[in-house]
Image (cartoon, rainbow, N blue to C red; front, side, top):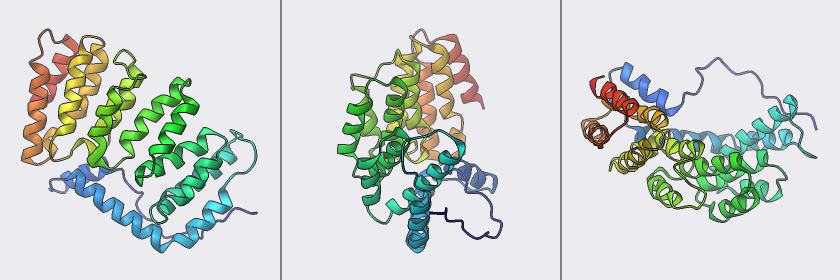
Length: 267
């Protein structure tokens, strides 16, 4: 079957990441709300998925790659387009097609996007465990597994999920990639990190304080997730400033982290 090619569309601005949307609002003189941005993005995506479902299903079918996995550029392009279509379809079919893809997938490139859609729609518990059992001996894959669970879940559940994963046997502060995969993913998911209760700020700071004794360079780098604290509303600003002050008050704080925290507070 020949790939489905959509007719050319009028030129439009590329879709921005949610953090970029927040920065654009700041430049326009508005105070961004990461949760509201996430909700608006979700509603728009649902609308696009519902109105374009027929085309999205054709795209998915036309660009799905059958046969053994190959890493060539053409196959990668087909898989990427099919997985993008799947992400939208999952918003309106309750991830039924994603469940089919996950069950039938014979490689991680197909499994991972399907798993993300299952988690995103609240149907990922069984698949998360199955994926872990299959890939538990692959270090880099399990890094992705940690990240996906906090970046794809309902943002209101991200702190609870991250907290549970901190107790997972495969998580350790001594593994920099694993720390970035879990704590970094939480901090880089705006709607999860900036929940109004400040729970994510507290969780991230707790882990940074613990990390500072083991890996001060990484701790200093991750602390920069607070660098935009003055961008937000007064309540979030107060909580993020308090989080930075709590790091600064750590006894025997490393020079790297102290310098970074001082710079952020003075910005």
